[in-house]
Image (cartoon, rainbow, N blue to C red; front, side, top):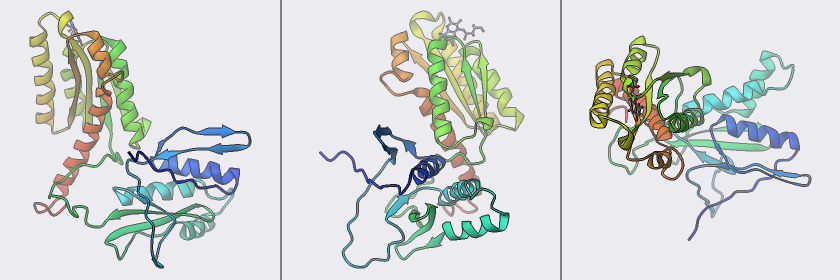
Length: 302
Ligand code: DLZ
């Protein structure tokens, strides 16, 4: 029956309210609905998991608000970049550095086998970010990619045929990339006439060496496509072959549907958005391949 948990915190001033909203957005929180009621305002931010924890005794708590993350280093980089960008107006480099030291801690191990840093984007509001030091704690051994796009460049190859649907897939892919922290300048969008042309464009992009992951988007309608099987087989084979031969992950976002209605459902209407899913898979695969390559001995990067 329990559905969600909301932690209400009052920002001390309107400026503090705006700063906190900006800080949380910079760290990649999904924004929830905001509200205005007379002079009062609210802005909400969502996390996939929420926990409330009551403590008996005088535990050494680093902050009232603890946020569990993956890729703690990348989150700290984002926090530091935000704090630098929002330093007091006219502050010298030395003053900015001094303020950073006071408002952002280093990543330190804790007694509860995690690593943690704290940030104070607004005076008096200290937030702790943490990650399990042993990410496999309690889990079977598996190497997994993260949904963090730091230092990655993506290309989206999108077919113009059935554009009413492929445009929605494109929106879904962009949504996934931008919400995962991608910069607009790190995303190339390439439009091709139809699904048939996707493998050729994808391969050309993969061979440039400037792209880390490719998202392929198209729609093939069985009812309206002559030689449907032949086209579908060639498109999927071509995308797969480009992936295997270039070593660049190619996410497959080519819908194969009986009808336009079915395709619309899979492009955000009723059954998720395949473009969003494909982009998430591309991010995960780029991250996973980097981890696999960085692991000197089997399992040591886990
Ligand atoms: C020709 C064609 C047909 C009949 N159906 C589709 C389709 O459902 N989805 C799609 O993306 N493209 C289709 N095309 C176009 C081909 O993919 C290709 O663009 C043209 O044949 C030109 O090479």
